[in-house]
Length: 69
Image (cartoon, rainbow, N blue to C red; front, side):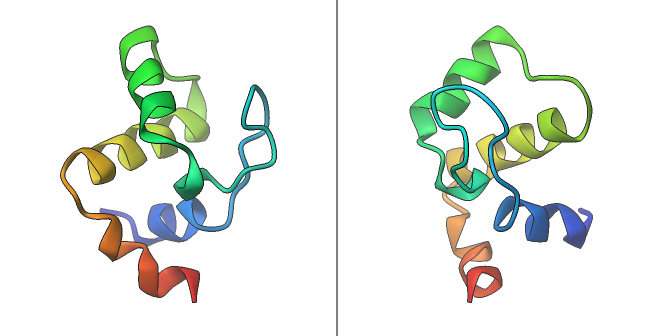
């Protein structure tokens, strides 16, 4: 796993939609499930959302906590 992806999850904001402006790691799980079912946006944002989905699905949010501080 690329450590920069984890850092981006705690710093990058959602650029569009209902949760525009919210830090990616703060997106609700239901929103990530919706993307999983409907398809992720292309490029880096899609990669980040897919990674965050896997992190939340597997209960690994604790990996992001030290990066937020």
